[in-house]
Amino acid sequence: MQGIISKCLAFSFLLTCIYGNTLTEDTFLSGPTNINGTEGKTITIPYVLNTNIKKRENYKVTWLKDGQIVDKNDGHIRTNEDNRKFSLTIYPLQRSDEGKYKLKLGELISQETVLNIIEIPSSKYPRLELEKLNDQLNVYCISENTSPHPKFSINEEELRFYENPTYIWVNKTVLITDDMPKESYTCVLELRDYYKLFAIITGIEITTYLRNITYGSTCPIEKTESPVMNFPFKFLLLVFVLLLVFKMLAI
Image 1: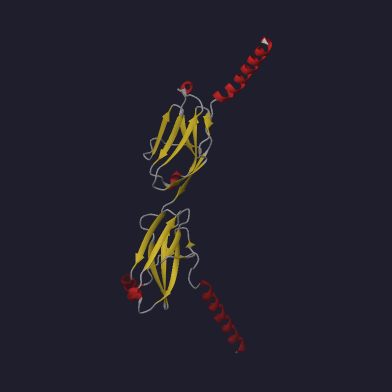
Image 2: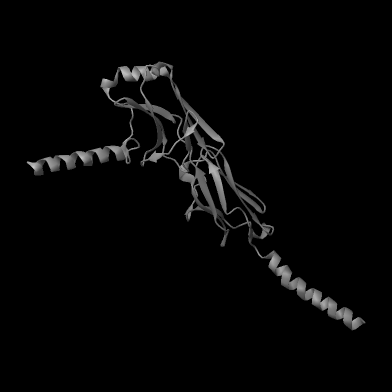
């Protein structure tokens, strides 16, 4: 019986040596690997060491972003250390904060945390602009080209969006009538189903624009793809050229 007890104690000691060493090895517990932060808001990246840090008191703590040391003197970045807990807090979040973060403690390096920034258009967006084409009026809802792309609607109608490197926009085409002073158009910009911005153009503004149309369109977009009458215009131009060619051949 005593022999059995001795063997059990020896086996228990062996397990303690194996698993005890494994559990006390300095590693970082798994933290977030991919987080989203909203521009202008606050985000905190946390890491926890699985053992007490006393034996590492003289080790330097370094935060890395895309392989480069994070400047702790940057006014919108704050770091915190509390025994086994480490955190990096950023406020307000900027687009340039997007990247891959790691924590280095001596030679020990944490897993990577990818910070994605949800970009918010500046306060001057969205805005509504007008463009007259013959007897039609294009109502543009324009915003800064941000990532991810926002959803647009004009008078609650969701429309196809267009973009160039600077802007993203939708447009609604309406017939110009004598009732234009009574019309109004509301643009809603929605981001991730929780961030909404509005812009409104009234019938008075529309009438003023149409009255002063000789000064040109107010639409500032340099289009990379025309959202209006692109295909019909090219088709009519092709028909005109073909008719001209046939007429010349007939002569």
